[in-house]
Length: 208
Image (cartoon, rainbow, N blue to C red; front, side, top):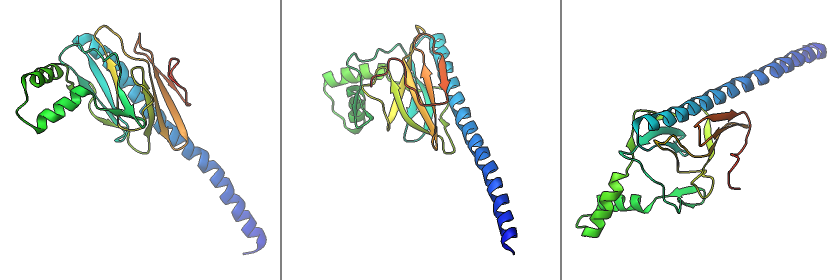
């Protein structure tokens, strides 16, 4: 091949690459947009389901497994005024959850422990059919989640978005990423509406 032929071949290859890269980026962004829309739909669905069922539900966001699903309690549940405990960007199990875990591992509890366990079980959450376990799939991942009751944004473990029968939820920001692209889901607490933004933004009341 002459130098001219090699130059032409390189020019053609460069043009094909210039066309292919934006196309690949568009496909990637379409996947991220689809997953963001799907999660936004799940949040809106849970807002309505809790109001209709008349009890407290929550959407579980598994940041490590990149999946989410719904859980409901048998009655209305109040969150602890002290909020959750966290460590290194992850939620720490509540005292009630620790009590239930301990009860499953040992026997011979005293009366006070049994009474505390019974109260904890009344407010326990179980998986519901409203939103089945859904994987983000592909290379779409949670980067971080902030919910109003959390002391900080979570980057690992599980986060919970609660929905009450009174028609309220929590101010929330969820960030999904695929490669360098990031989408933000901002949840309005009074209406349950979800704003999907094709960039990284925080909720208006988010703690810095």
